[in-house]
Image (cartoon, rainbow, N blue to C red):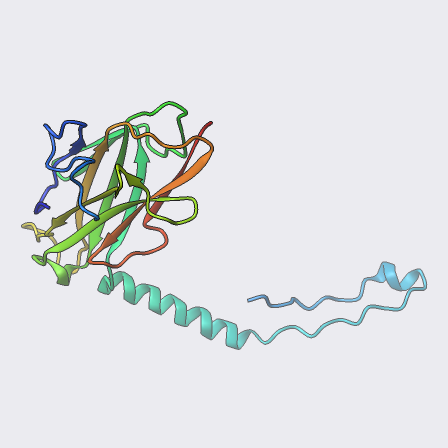
Length: 215
């Protein structure tokens, strides 16, 4: 575990020389129909005319749309929760709070083991500044089960604490960038996997990156 202000790049080496985390020591971490008019062509050819459907009342849909817009605006201004942009890539690093990614957007790997990296940017609401958060990454197979290495689940974890920098306008989301470089892992060919992120023991469906391993 480590506190992150501008998180360092992490690399998992087989000997653990360059990281505190090694594979052997990682802990178990409105479908509205539009009114249709009768077609003149249909009428002129002797077919029964198609009855025109009354136009839908737009007042309710307009109110619903306006309500959704207001909610989206409120969420944007208030920063109601933590959001994450996550990417699987060949390698990544963080410098001056910015992510530098090589070979981003991986969806297929293998068949030979290869280095991988996880790059993600966490956006934290303004009112959660200086609060410590715990993050955790798990590896799942295509059935949603945790993947084990040497009998233990492959789990990475740490802590981060966003801070308000000088000159930042009040209400601005606070960003935290992270890069985790992972040594080649012995995945099974012909199967799918996913890295899943959780923060403070909470997660979202979009906080996952899925990939397939060639046979």
